[in-house]
Length: 190
Image (cartoon, rainbow, N blue to C red; front, side, top):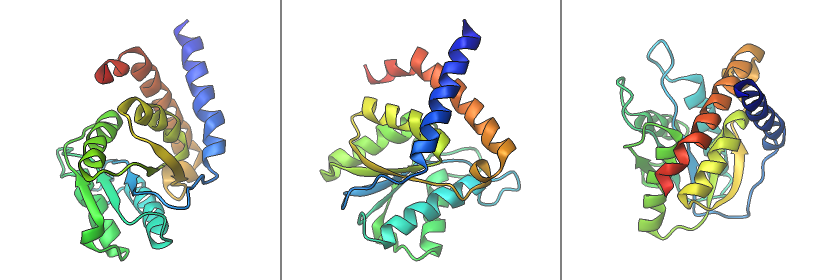
């Protein structure tokens, strides 16, 4: 039964990932949420951090939203959102357009704490940025957190999406994360 459930989770992620490769954007949103991810093994910016941040910066530069919410707390090697902010600033985004969510340690928390920021600022709609394999679970968790996802933008330039083996491993890991969330994670929002 567990194998069938895993296969079903993997199928949902893989089939939806193809649709998430195509951007779905509103004309305007209040903010762009960049979901956090860790540093590379060498202690430098990870491929995931670069891909997600650069995809969000492209949207910001095109005028889809005036603010970037960088998510991610302490990983033992620094605070993820700070690294995302550094990348965005190197790409030309002023610090005044960046909001940091610095407490989260998971996608669920990225979205829960981002919802607090959205509520405080009275922002209603966001564009979500992550890799296509991560978007299915992230959108499900956003809905449970009360975050209105007006659109999404795929971060497809990182190794975890461009190369077959890392992409396959990431899809399997996200399938397990989806199974875990569907089993227990929803309790966080109840």
